[in-house]
Image (cartoon, rainbow, N blue to C red; front, side, top):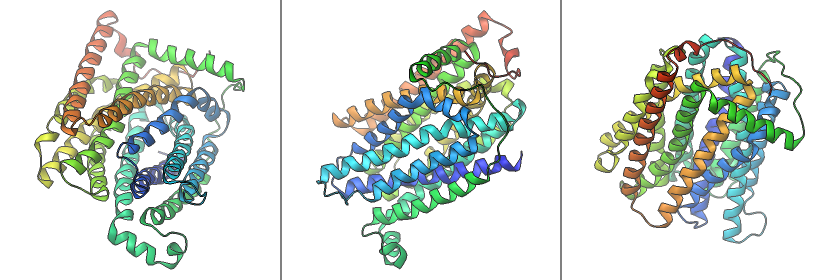
Length: 433
């Protein structure tokens, strides 16, 4: 691994750390403004909209400029969203208007994340050889999940009564903030500044792609052709289906855990955010274990996805702290173990068939489209006042059933082409369509 790769890891870690802490701070801000419980899922929904709407363009953007610079520029956009959220009360808006502004600010952060993602993943394929992609993905997924853990926990700590009171007593923060959520946002802005400094340190890999079109109609046409190419590829379609399901389920599970902690365990938001961190900690252990899986054996982890869905069904049965933590660690571990090899396989197939930036944009488009669907379904179920334990059971059954269908689909592909496994790990060059 090169030094530049570790700068990528560091920049991604701090940027994602800030993103996840800001999500908790935004929920606290909405609660402070007496917003409804389902507003948290609406924020997730708007972030996903940014990914889907911009999918046709961010890949070309990431392939037009050195990816370290793209990461810097898009991190700066996240800072703009963070600052706008801080000034939610500065525009003489009603309570509903301020809630809408908080959601809009977080949506801007989502736009920055949407444009950031193809660069951060695409630069990995430029820096590492195919045989190192699983290890590289284990690093970036592990550190990303670590940032999710620390971000969720940090966000919870920053808004907790004890820490928030201490922060507001500090002259530098007290001069800028009057509420726990505002104090948290000030601290989070500093994390984005660290990510920006690390982005400056990322070297130019020297990889250049053909000149990208700036015609929006052409970009859309080419992008959806890329989508078609990856879905038609027998290896790409399976890995894309798995990662699409995983990220949709993962985003929904974050919201489910917060609501489950509030209803079943009587946790405050800062306490429920720790549950998100525990599940993410399990994902790190799973990602570390997955680093020993070669890209040639990536498809062998598919049954683990079925197990994850089935284990989720036990959530309504647990009450004690240690049983709750153990179950969430297990769910996270299973998810990390099966998604890392599939993510590496998808990135490799995308790099061979398309290009680094475009393949990640296609991946994000499909994953975020599923997040839109699953989060929308979850929001409607909350709005209909369906009990959270019923939602959890429906969620676990759906994940297990869909993973079983994907396994069947993969078996049919291999029956039709017994030599399919030999294509895994083949080297190639991205091509334009």
